Image (cartoon, rainbow, N blue to C red; front, side, top):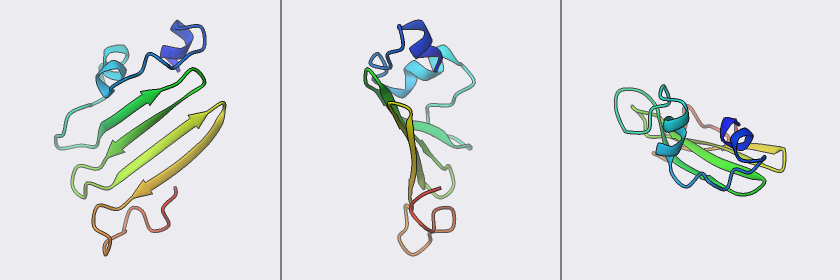
Length: 89
């Protein structure tokens, strides 16, 4: 949201996770012991950000397009959907 505030409401400047940590250094963008932002991309009216869980490699995505927010997840191992049983959260 800070990026949009600094860019007249546009998220289009978001091309990679590193841009998020440049604005907020506490956001992890490389694989380590904790979840990290593995993908980030923006458009004029929204963004998509994906976090990857460190231990399971499950992916959790938030998409905001024009104020409509969706949350989806993808289990890394199809037979172990512990953190992502329904594909949404």
